[in-house]
Length: 243
Length: 250
Image 1 (cartoon, rainbow over the protein chains, first blue to last red):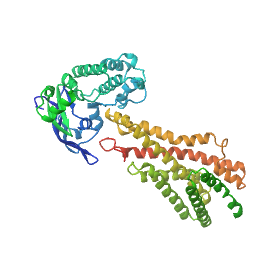
Image 2: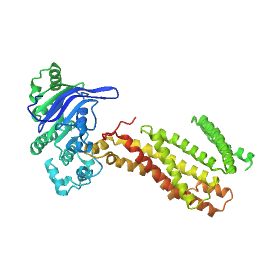
Image 3: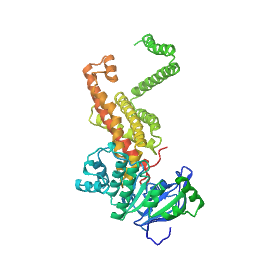
């Protein structure tokens, strides 16, 4: 990816191995600040591992990651994770109500979340205030993802990582989440990295895209590259998904 | 009890053997092995205790208690083999339990400082602590495995390992203590405790037997609480690395 934009995250020859298996191989590239970059590629390409490296849930075996031009290893893990939020694919919740889940990021810092603030975050993700006292185990898949995204916003992260947040949702929920992500990106100027299998989503919502395969970064650039990939492997992948 | 009377109690071994054989339960070998082991182990312990009681030496008392701690540690550690350093963590817990319980009992002169009191009470405390440790580790590892997403969620939101594991730790502590608390609620109503029954059968005054039993059940409450809390707080840091990442349990 060209460096005309200021990078929020920069990967420099980053590799990751676990249990004697190489998952990421010498990845070099940047995620532009304030933009939405989609991560696409077949299952097992190492996309989720890459996200977890950005959030410090994993540490590279080799290479360096810079967050806002500062080495990731110099950040305190708790500070880093507040700065780089992640919405996980399964949208895990703690047992309790939506409000209790919203209050979680603050309670971890021994601070309180007011009801008024919680209502504001609910509105940000298109849910009305009646959801506040609902138990999370009664939410639909789309509602869970919205709550999960809103919970991440409470830490006021400047970078948001989204791991296949629409993969298990119906068409209407997918559209709602897409609109939501675009509006959050605009409203809060949050840098977003979004793993998706939906290439149409990558084209319409993402500003940039990374195509990964077998732990390697194959092609990267503006999302429109998916319309005319230069690498034959990417062309084959795009053709396969669109078929 | 005469040796003839004792031999007749083997009828209680023949009944399960006969039932196992008839119903093809396949438990004959285990039943025979368990019977032989219990005879040998108990007889050996009987002779060792007689020797130690007669000698009245603190060195022998110390060695007996140390042996109990070693055996209990080796037994309990199997349940926490995914946790780094679990052996010394269990051993330390058992040592603390022994110091606290004997410290109170001997320090306040509640029981005399003789082998007849120290060894059986130590056995009960260490044995109970071992069972509690096993129950705790069983539940704790199951909680971590089934709530990995929740733990990772809290870490991803900027929580510390202690905050991330708090619920699982509390659940495991509570679950491991339930049998102790529940059995104490019905003590004397459903069953007479083994030690008390033994004393009464041996001809002791029932009130004195009850007094000793109360001493034991109160001490067991401390043992239960201390065991699971100590093992829990000593164990959880080993589940994370210095970058506050949850390690894979092997």
